[in-house]
Length: 401
Ligand code: FRU
Image (cartoon, rainbow, N blue to C red):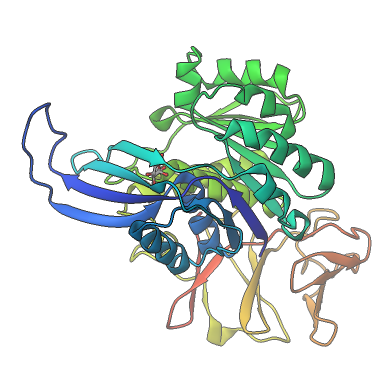
């Protein structure tokens, strides 16, 4: 679980579902009307919470009636609101969204008349208490100073920046972030024909950043620091609601990078979760279990004193399961020392007092809590965590994010 601070916009969305996209001057009846809190940062933080993190939002809120609705929405999403900046002047930002039932495409009309987060407000936040900072690429004037202090005062916390639209001066911020996430909108408006063209250009400007560019049905382009540009095709899905798919992608990407996975892996997971999002309405219960999933084990089979190793066709490595405090921990059965199963020579020994697991091959001891090796040949390396979900019957499933 990581503590994540998101800096950006919060919006009240009104979503009309329609049977077809209206023509100009047409009068059309909506099938459903939904009120929801939105805004890229808000959505990304909500998904990060569902992925097991603890998120906090730094955004601005007005003093009108809609602001109460917005704050209630943030509370329901379990997003910490301590770092919100309140304004007497201005109005709650609103989006009217037409969601076409035929293809899941969303058309957004956005209204805003509210100041953005000020530099002075941001500067008072104890940013060093967070594990990751995610910025929406807007409010460039103030973001410059914010990124500057974040870059200067933080040593271990990665900084990510989402660039959805071209904004005056935003390019100057690119070398301040560790992870840059571009939308195809930015790329096309800047005249790039695909993600490869954009990334080759950005690599010159931000040589020390990981770069990703999502391009809807054309998939994702990405490049790690000083690495060649790769392309991942989109998995075709039956889309019924694409609103927030990009925000979901960003959340999953951050989540997998926090877990120390490669960019390649993280992008694949993010792509899958964004695809899954498009097949459901809204962002609630994004990780819920579907009737097609099969459990990998049941909690009744587990104990705090011994591990259970199970196989799943969806994973390359078998999975180590163990009860821990009130939950269950799951790791790939692959020792980072020599890439061998922990139980290759003998069973995996568990010390319930020290709360460690031991690899039987060269006696590396891993903390059950976070998988970190605290003694042995791969000291400070970690076992790779596996995301799981447990239903009310205690059945354990792989969470496909
Ligand atoms: C979706 C979204 C909506 C919001 C709009 C703001 O990505 O964040 O929730 O209304 O975009 O541009």
